[in-house]
Length: 110
Picture (cartoon, rainbow, N blue to C red):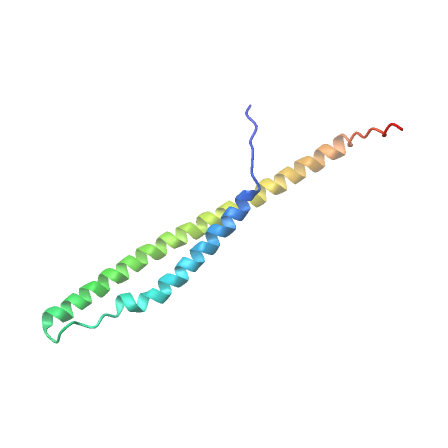
């Protein structure tokens, strides 16, 4: 049986992923008006249609990016939760071992 190793730094990584994702969501929300509200270059119908098409594409792109950000946030939250579960399990197992076998201490010579 192979031992399972866990690095407690995973919780920090998860927190960083969630924090970065929240910053990206805020940046996307700030960029949304400039990407989706376009003024037609001219007064003719082609310019109006092009502006509407660009705005529709930008809206779809922003929805895709927001979905990716949501997935990253879920991943970061899952990493934090996994770190919590591993830490709690390790602490419980260590406590059980301490009850079964108290720590051995040797008196210092001298």
